[in-house]
Image: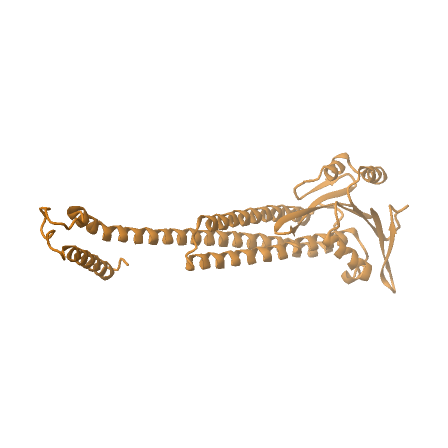
Length: 335
C-alpha cells in the first residue's frame, strides 16, 4: 500500500497537506512529498526504483531486510535504515524503517504498520510542519521520524527496569521463604540471561543510531540545512542518554545476579552447616550405640548390660551428650 502526502506552506493558512493513494504524478515546487509504503513488494520497489532512479544496492537492502542501523549517501538522495524497538508479548522485537530522502521527496518503507510513522502522519495531517516556523522541508520530516524512533527506546527501557526490580524482589522473596529449589533457581537464571541479551541488543542498536546521527552532525547529508541541525543535536544527545541508561541497567542486572549468587551460596552454606551439626551430634551417639549394640540382656560382658534399667541410662546419657553439644555450638555462635 502506497500513500503520498504533499506538504506545502500557505502564507495565511500555514502548512497544508494533501493526501492521495499511489505515487504522485509529479512533484510540486515549494512543497515536500512524503511517500509512505507499507509492505515490501518487489513490484512496488521496481516502480519506485524506475520512477525515482534509486540505486540497486539500497533497493536490495529493503527487499532483503534484517539490516543494521546505517546511513548511506547515493547520487541525488540519502538512504537510512532505522530499527525501532518494541515488544511482542514478553519478548523484545525490532521493526525496520527504510528511509530514502532528497531535497524534494522522502520515502518511508516498512513491512507492517509502525507506531512512529502513524505519529508522524497524524502530526503533519493535523498541523503540517508549521510548528517549526519554517517552510516545509524533507530534513524536518526526517527529523520527526528519527526523533520518534529514538523516543521509542524509552518505554522499552522502562519495561526492562520494571523487570529488573521484579526480579530483585523475587530473589529476596525466594531466599526469605527458603524456596531455593533447582527449578526456581533455573528460572531466575534464565531471566538473567534474557535480560542481559535484550539490553545488549538495545545498546547495539542505540550505538548504531548514535553513529548515524553523528554522520548527520558532521554534515554528511547535504539535504539537511544548518538550522535543522539544532533539532538533530537534541536527538543526538538523547542517544547518548539511551546508551548510558542501558549501561546502568546492565550494571544493575550484574549486581542483582551477584546478589542472587551470593544468596544461593549463603543458603547452601546454611544447609551444609545444619547438616554438619546434625552429623556431629549423631556421631558420638552412634559410637555409643555401636559399642553397646543396644543389647541389654544378661550374659554380655559389658558394664551395665545386666541391669534392667541399663537401656534407659544409655538413652539418658546420649540425650545429655547431644544437649551439651548443642549448648556448646550455640555458645560458639555456630547455630
